[in-house]
Image (cartoon, rainbow, N blue to C red; front, side, top):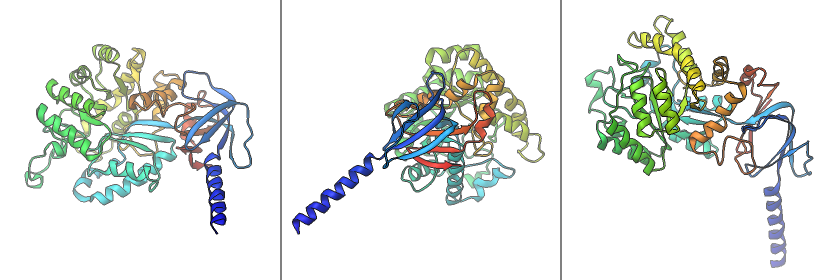
Length: 430
């Protein structure tokens, strides 16, 4: 009996070993690998245990135990990274009432739906820059556990603001509905001590990074869309505390002064950047600060500002003034040599339409290859995940997308992703 059990054990062990060794072979007609290399034709990508094992020239044949995916008629690229999303919300007419009517469970269900749309659009990783009710952290965990279909998430949790600032959740709310004044736990800080407390609370909540709103914003219920809203000591307190906890800092900013303070404080990225000037760009180059443009959000709010009743009247003039400017700011920043990472502010417009950003970037003068690299190599570098993400190279996580045709000749075909792989698992194949 012991001999039989031993034999069964050996057989099971061999079967398990064989299963681990099984690989996926992907025959790519064209590969854009995310590096600064030119595209390669007729390439085999071998995936083992969720990572790229090797990339070989020619169409190599798998063994009988391996899986073959035929993408010989496609252009294959690393999975895209959107550096600025809000999966817990989607702007629509009347959505300003959602915070008064929707329970956290409702928000979470919607977020799961938006996450799936995002993944199927080819975005295998996102930075989730601001939520409520801890939805993004829970969503991140559910996706990583295989319970929910969506992109890999790096979550900021609740954005940080000063009293009355862009991310103060009590703006324009009747006093009797507010109760106690919001605290650092709610994302509202005043002074460097509270700033430290807020970062530590985000860490306790399970956030991966910090998001703060250094200036006014378009969609908040406040009069200014660009005034500076943090002092230098507050910004420095946030940055140094975040660094102690291994967290990066992303900064919403439209106005020049708020951007300049944030860059000098050592933040990792500026989001939107509408009124960026040459001095701000020079400071960003000096500090290595990334710019995440969100052109699509700007275009979208400008269009919707023309729809009567879509925005509250306090928001409408800001949307009209700021929204149309972001694409030109992007062009100026690109020409000035500022580091640029792809980001859309999805949720301000409909989730799943993240691809629109590529077209606007190319329209503004960025070559298609650089636009793709902004959503792969550069976005991974901003995340400080370039050891695992951003390029198709041996040892990195196996994230891939594919389209029919040549996106370098026609960037618009990135709206028609027909293949998505994340961590070596296929989520879409048409």
